[in-house]
Length: 586
Image (cartoon, rainbow, N blue to C red; front, side, top):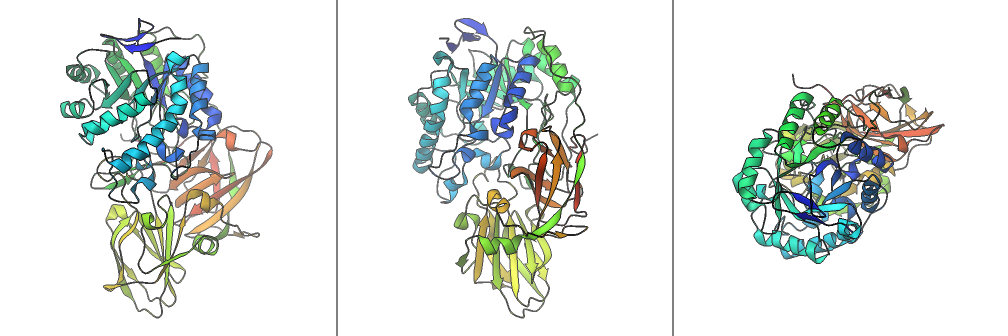
């Protein structure tokens, strides 16, 4: 068996210097049918290692309910890395950021607002202990000294930017060592002195996260990590996108030059990302630095492999740089992407979302409007309704909206309260029968002090200053939505009204990837054959949703379902020949 250790100036593989040339691939953002392809392309570019986070919230969606199959089969992912002759870095968190909902932390942790977040608080630590024990059941037998690919395991994630609880970091270290981790343990922080000081502990090897000026940042790291190998374990080769902004890109040439400068220092590197993939389901996170900004469904990241796993100009520029520092395989991936299959899907309304939800889901009754934590913490949508009789035109007010609320009076949507607008009031027309609120979680904050916060209408509902009481509530996850019954005879129309489930079918001659053009839709979620592609939104930047080929049924009828929350201008959607991630900054 081999040994991987930290030497005086280098990582050492069986006593010989080993430079880690790694690329990030998140197994949970890539369809399992594509894992081997993405890993192989990393090797063909010149990398020798693949890094991944582990998302606690996906693996344990409810306390004690562990999931590790299909897209969450970490064991299979790591063994596939080994099959390709590569090493692996595992970053289990428990907090991962990753622009992932709630930073990878389960929402059920925070149904009690007094539970500690990223600190040595007993209830938080008990849950973490159980989580890390489950993950290490997979990782420990696959360490390099047991014949597996794993050479490094990270403790926490950029902790110096959040807290300074040394006991917390020590406890995590003890849990990992106690579970049998023998490979080096690392930390990562931005190369700022106070972050590097607070974010690590003795016995943990410091690494840095940055995306430019590599030699300067590595010099800062060296002052805080006097011995051992220098490493950028997050070399940001691109950036993520947020709804309502432009698609982020960086110059392939300039990025490659900076990578060259980094490698010229002798440092190791992990490209973040090598392949970004997709926030399938409703897994995107959000940032809130005074303004709430949810992350897009695409996590393309302007990485060397695009969202569909195809080499970009950055891939070839990086490969050329890497050739100066490591032998390259003779094999290369296909350089030119073929156009994806096109065609169209005619959608028809199959039911009102609120009506179906209240008819089929459990209904709770409360005096005041409950939050998500008080109903179902992992819900994507919570719907509230109350019976009102002959209320004249009035003003509805709320304490705070997290994140978006459709206000419906007697079956007609009369407005939307948006978190990013800090909206707290809406003029209501006369109400004769019913007031309905459809509350959407647009992605939980993944970074900063609002991590773990509750969702919903916070602070109650008032009409003309008087509290509104007597509410019925239903809560739905994305799987609940797709499981709602559909009308046997869909209602065809030229457009799709707000808060409507619609569906259509299409033929697929083969299982090639496709790109669903959502530019005619408003805001909502799309599924193909029950697989949740993620959210779409007319505000962009992205105009397509990626459809992985393995979810398609070749030479058969395939089903597209959308939950349209706003309004779609057309009931016909098309498949585009290529990705369209939106306008870029000039």
